[in-house]
Amino acid sequence: MNNRFHNFRYEVIICGLLSLFYTIITELGIFLVIKGVDKLLDNLSGNNPAPLENQMIYNTPLNINYMPEHPYNLSYWLFAFIIILGIILFIFYFLLLTKDFASYIDEIVMGIDEISSGNLDARIDIKNEDEFTIIASKINKMADDVNKIMEAERKDETIKNNLITSVAHDLRTPLTSIIGYLDLVSSGNHLDEEMKKKYINIAYSKSKRLEKLIEDLFAYTKFSTGEVTVHFHEMDLVKFMEQLVDEFYPSFQEAGLCHEFTSSHNEAIIEADGDLLSRAIANLISNGVKYGKDGKSIKIELTKYIEYVTITITNYGELIPKEDLDNIFERFYRVETSRSSETGGSGLGLAIAKNIIKIHGGTITAKSDFTGTVFEVTLLNQVPKKSLNHDTMGKEGI
Image 1 (spheres, rainbow, N blue to C red):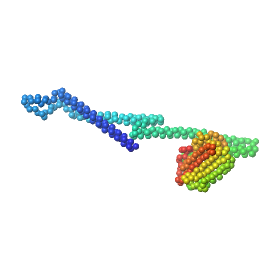
Image 2 (cartoon, helix red, strand yellow):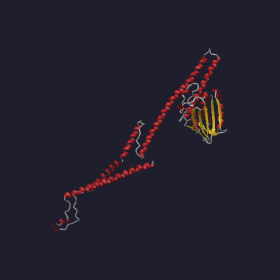
Image 3 (cartoon, rainbow, N blue to C red):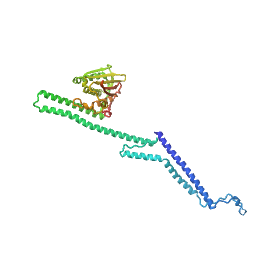
Image 4 (cartoon, rainbow, N blue to C red):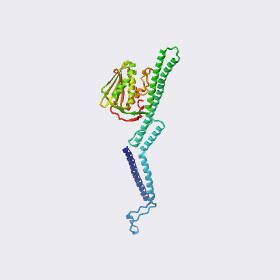
């Protein structure tokens, strides 16, 4: 940038020198013209001395030092005239040589006025490579950034509206069921004890689903506002996964799923926040249980490499369409067929999992083909041990 500023200064200096040069040439020409006119006037007025051969009048010797006095002296007003004319000529030539700069500045000012008036699609043409071009490009970039921010705000507003609609639907559905079944129990004197117990159990399961939705909403709020505190500590990922899989044994049994957990090593030490990592992996396993029932099996594998560890969760249920696969980690996104009261979640579980893994410096991917639906988590063996308030949650994926 400094070189470009120097270039502009050099251009201004060159324009000044050229203006001075043109001024001198012009004034020199004018001076010669005036001298020529002055000489012509002298000739016309008869003030020229006679030739030498004709100057022996009355046999008197000629005084060659004699200079006839001009009837009017031009020296004083001519000097003042040249000075004033020089200033005028210099300004004229300088403005003429710098008119491109002036017009470009006017163009930049007009572009700024357009953008400041709300026309964020207005752009300033990039012409040269001086600081005016830098200013124009910065203004264009500012307009682009403002456009992106406004587009992001519009997108966030759309997401918020979708959130309100989705949350209202998801809260209303279980609440309506709970109220309905409890009304049957409270007013149904004709119901036997077995039916009352059945309805109470259904209302209880609906209330648990409602509780899970509320928990996810609270988690989402914390993540999106950066209120999550992360505490890294050393942990054995193999033992961690064995314990987590054991906790899901009742869910596997209820869904009629055979489960298998394997590890390439007996130990895999990493640094992580156990509570957050448990939530992320649990969300993935829960997703496999929900949508893998038809496959009758779920497989969980841990593989340790030199620099990283991978955890894969594979279910053999209904495949996820490719158009949905690209969006499943987006907040509040759900595959349309999953919006049933039986399996439909909050649409936040996978988004929360993705951001928790990101906090740990890892990645999460998904694929779904004839070999099954596979979620793969990659975690680095070395993660800086620290505690921090993480404020990037919710900016990508959540």
